[in-house]
Length: 299
Image 1 (tube, rainbow, N blue to C red):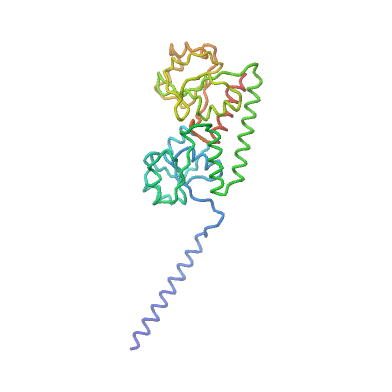
Image 2 (image 1 turned 90 degrees about the vertical axis):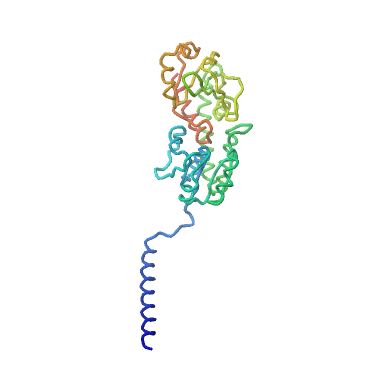
């Protein structure tokens, strides 16, 4: 009979030893703090940069390599998880990033239902839609700022936008008449996207007093895909957005069609670093700053 009590004592000692060891391990792990930023994943790049504008670095982003080539700024942290294509993100990788919230676009209609088992989903849309893209970008930023308790950051970024637009507008106003501008991005050696009505870039043009040389129709993202030879208006500036695909690189050096364009003949061609044409408030700030530096500071 004495063996049973001894076994119980031995078991209690082992459990006490395990409990002490576990407590020691837990002391090494910092407790979660109420003020820690939420873990947010973003499917689209406009919402990725909107998070960054509010001081929240996303834990996971779709097509991270593409973001770094086409959006460029703001730069994402090195440990950001790439969850694959925007239209078909890896649900396994996304779940492993352990988000508290997933941001996606209403444009990706069937995606929210697939994401909901992983974390709560917020579907917000800047593109494609009618109206002023920059006004929509500001409203989406406000919505996220309220959701994530980042109202001070919202006030800061919108103030930066206003200052940068005023700075650009002042430089444009120095001209005797409004500038007429083509803004293009090469699709291949023969075709360009020309940005105009409905684009984020047009929103900046309108606020800064810049006239667009392209008055044709555009799609829901604010551009038309056209042959290069259609850029025939007598524009004051022809602005080329990076990146330029390898197939089109030779056009800028000596294509007869390129050389025949009025803005090229007058020497008013400007190459701008990449800015995401379907971006948010930070893309608008970046675009206005680059215009001021590369086009209007060079007079």
